[in-house]
Image (cartoon, rainbow, N blue to C red; front, side, top):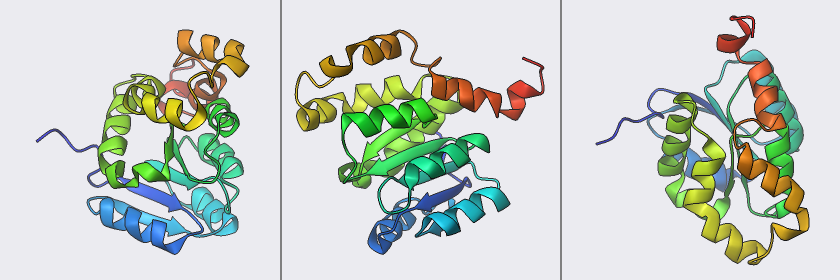
Length: 183
């Protein structure tokens, strides 16, 4: 069995749907999981606790605003959504520093996806490249075959610099391992 990057991790899951939070709790049973069902509770937890990972819904809990807060705290963050599954929100998640953007339809594979993403993140590998390798066909089917054409400049720059996007730069500014080196 491959190493589990989730085991013992302190994770915050935020969603306004109780059944989604219960499913995440069941799936991530080897992690220490905190949950929140609204923006205010989640924001307080982000300020008061140190998390190894945050999983944020976008709609209903102001997930993109919470993303700004988790990035500021240096918490790797995965966006999980059903209703905000569109190219614009995907790009906004990238710009704001999320390490991934998962459709709720993939919840059944959440532990496998998060384990792969956290492993890549810990090794300094591009998490977005991994996401598009695993779910690229899903995005093509969901958004249409030419979905990147509308924002071609964004996507061609993104493809060249998976790791050096604005969001990554923001995360690096808040990463103690890097800031401590005076970089």
